[in-house]
Length: 84
Image 1: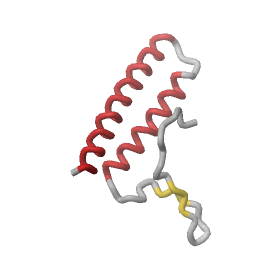
Image 2: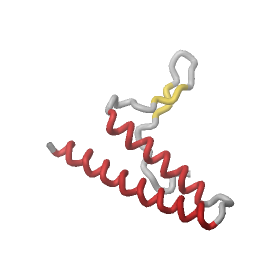
Image 3: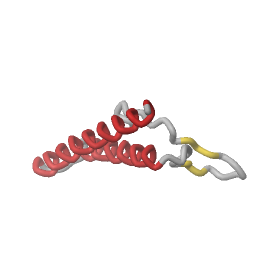
């Protein structure tokens, strides 16, 4: 489940008989951070669907809002850097 998030860049590498996941194929630390924020956001949304009490769900909703904001800012910065 990706909740509509673009997870482009997660590439499975199948060399030498292994099945490793290359989490940073571009070598770009900003991209890696953005991917981890996306994964965290997916995890938070899954937690929100879980069987938690109301107070916990309010806390999770706040974390989702904060993560979405940080992801938006990171994306804006990356897009701005690409234009330069």
